[in-house]
Amino acid sequence: MTADNGFTLSIMTTCDQSAHFNTISCGFVHVVLTGQPIELPLGFSDIHNFYEFLIPLTPLRRFQIEDQSVDCQPGQIVPINPGQRHGVKFAQRDVSYILLLICAERMTRLIRQINVNAFGFIFPHCALPLRPDIQHLISRLIQENKCPGSGCEILMHCLAEELLVLLVRHYYQQPASLDWAAPEVLVGEQPRFRPVINHMRLHYAERLSVEDMAALCNMNCFHFIRTFKRAFNTSPYNYLTQIRLGNARRLLIETRLSIAEVGRRCGFRSPSRFSAVFQSQDGQTPSRFRKEHAKF
Image 1: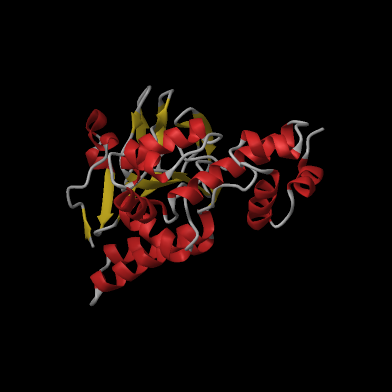
Image 2: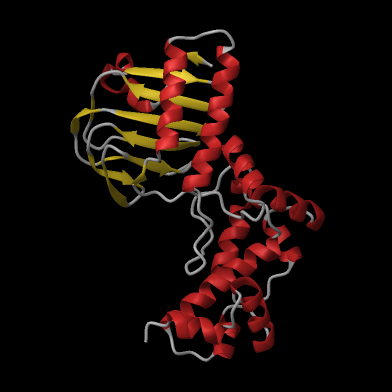
């Protein structure tokens, strides 16, 4: 791991602020620190293919992640997923922070290792409490880089690995069972499947065959199933089922439609099939789920 190895973000080249940053880098993790307070200019935004974790050292108000505004305070951490535009609408002065930037491929691989059932690789983009163990690891990385001893690179690589595991352990969340939807942001190998993901989201109530889905990506069925599972850690059919179940939960909560009609509208061809799949995923029948969560 080395310092100031040429890694840059767009803010580093804005208003000649590169001298205000210190960077500690290894192959899959970059730690970027503001060496002195900086100014975030009016309308500044950035977008890149890293997983980013913003740790404010001074208050950062109305920070934008896509169309969501987040107030960030010291003692918090804000995850930003690959491909999410983020920045500020209004100029902010005297801002200090730490950024953790992590290779998307390395992070998605780790998520699969830790959570074998993961089918989405998206962190919640909101301000969360900064855990003391993560804060301690960052401090150790900074200190080891500042005063390197024997075995420095090995130790820092191990610290970086541990940091990734703790970020996933504390902040990664499977899509919520009450509100699952195919993610807007696709990472790693996933963007190649955007046509079929969009089709699933729009046509989940229809009968969709593997042949139809493969054709949308210009692949044969065998290659489509194999590469889809590698990218999403689940089969195309299971992914589609999760979309159907997410919409079924919403209808059960928000409407008075019969159980059979909810199932039919969400692509399940019989009430018995809908109930069986729902119970296998949620551990309760659709009727029981409605009684516990209905808004009427």
